[in-house]
Image 1 (cartoon, rainbow, N blue to C red):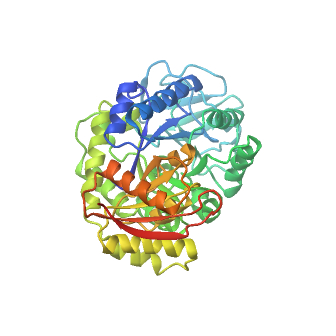
Image 2: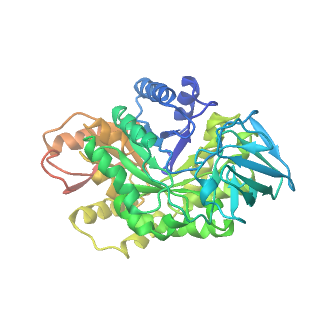
Length: 472
């Protein structure tokens, strides 16, 4: 089992139930649905299929839904793809027109008013650069700076724009309500700029009486980088979305930004996901480039919780093969990590309370005795998350009677979640832990496991015991 988790985006190429099932078998931990490209009926079908597969395979796959956020996109086009040619001009119309190489529309007609002469617009994740050369009340005329392709509903980024968009649109409100209704596990919040954006979503979840869905803020603009500490404070984690981020900031800065945010996220004990174009070549080819392999490897070495596949599995020709490839890369790189040094690196920076002290001791003991697993009993998932945060060298089996808690651990580093019945004694916890280790990891006689947790489960909300047990 790989400790770095894998998220796969579902789209036209992968929404078939059999493909989703094969991707889960090959190592996908979380299924992602991007509501910028899906509708509620499609999302519901994907969620139902995933839950059915979980019942068939006895797995606990997490489900993530992306909000649209305050994004700007072009409208529909006459053809699936249209090439824009360098040196020509294109008009952006206030009216809702079907676009071609001469004119396109936008989901935010207000940009006609706010864009200035000389303003730079980047289409389709920066593949085409436009510059405003004239404007009137109804349209912008833009010079095309380079050859490139655009597709229906592709993004428009305006890096130097000085106008603000409302963060929580009516559509995103409906998306959050849908997520609560479908009991998904994670909301990926698009185009977050500050902690106030995250708190808007949090307020809506409180209004909807949901305390289960975890909020993952997508870091994809300059403002989010500047406000990262505040965003981390109110989020359950962040996703470093390098596609839009690479459009908004100088692309050569992305690697250092990624490392800084990954480090800060770990210090904050929050989830870190690295996303976008990790194995992009495999969208059309059965093999990745060497540079892409190194990119995935570096994400693993950055101690991130999860890596994500986007268009590779959503619209690519080889979704299952791409998952297999990423799984192999993760497996190979994790063999090279020195987990004892990693633990020392973390503990130097922290003051330990009781729960953290037991979590640290559990990982330290597991590393020293070369344990086959750390098994923890938990109601809320906090025990497992604290142990995961110290990046143990063995898997962490998280046992809980709460199915929502179990699915909510699917993205955390190294955690293998399992639903169990409620227990009434520490002896039952030990027996249950041994049985879980045998079942999930097929541990042999004489192999040691470290058992940690909270007891009694219902009345203690912190980790308060640890035991080393040998498999009989």
